[in-house]
Length: 385
Ligand SMILES: Cc1cc2nc3c(=O)[nH]c(=O)nc-3n(C[C@H](O)[C@H](O)[C@H](O)COP(=O)(O)OP(=O)(O)OC[C@H]3O[C@@H](n4cnc5c(N)ncnc54)[C@H](O)[C@@H]3O)c2cc1C
Image (cartoon, rainbow, N blue to C red; front, side, top):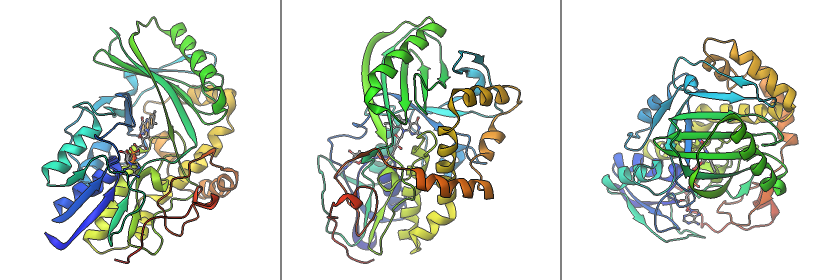
């Protein structure tokens, strides 16, 4: 064991477990504190996607690079495996040369991403302490990955069984998903349908009911044993990752989230990986994040601003443009590249952005993140590395 000291990690989500896996591989003794009695209890067995459009490298290569094995459901969906509908219900078939995303399951069932990461961590000797909700931690080296604490976007949906073949459907229409999107994901007899909204949360039920009606208009779908769920995601205008202390913040807790559409798993895992790397190689976490993650996150906030100002007419136009391309991946990736234009939009987006819902729980030290600014004192005791 390196260093003798145990590194404490708070939160057994993708960010915390990716950090634990990498530290354990490098010979560090690691304890993960998880408030629940199992992983993935924030989720509901719903399908999600590991997006595969924002990087040059395929997401599976990225997972491999950050030390993660695929021991969970991770099924490629190409654009041809699904359909998109715009506000006028114009049916749009797009094309990709590689999977558009990898379908994964979240929750506590055996094939979920969460259980897969748990198995990898435990096989490496990571000690997970269950049902330990930490509000403070007394450690010289700690990583905090406790997930979102405020809502910038919410999702309302259901999981159900169906006889429909594997497929996905995406909808863009502010009348069913304000400034967001609705989606159907079907895999081997199970399905997830949800609508994600970035504003007007109080009318979530209305949007959800409308979205369901639209779904039933475009497809004859059999819905068996439906179970409703809800959730939220949180992004910051700038991630808050570490304030001259021994504590490193990872995942959505620190704002590592795709502000455009809420595809935060990749950023959560990358931040866990770089937090571990900074400890293993005694490098500065902030520098690593600046080098490898921040520019994409900033561009995603600029993209959010742009998307929020498109309105239904803009969604129709985008789908129209995309449908004529032989491969939409380069076009999508281009939008995640930093450019002068995106930097300017980022400045605008930072001024415009406001977190919608504040939760008082925070583990940040001397921080000015959204909820700290609202008067919460940090609990984690500092102790420099
Ligand atoms: C409905 C929904 C759909 C989504 N779909 C997608 C998608 O398709 N693609 C995508 O990339 N992203 C998606 N996301 C976002 C994605 O799920 C998150 O970005 C990702 O899970 C963040 O990982 P994390 O490790 O930072 O946090 P989490 O996954 O939230 O894990 C945090 C962990 O910390 C634990 N914890 C919290 N507080 C404490 C405490 N005080 N003490 C101990 N333990 C604590 C929690 O119990 C939890 O296990 C979706 C989110 C929602 C809600």
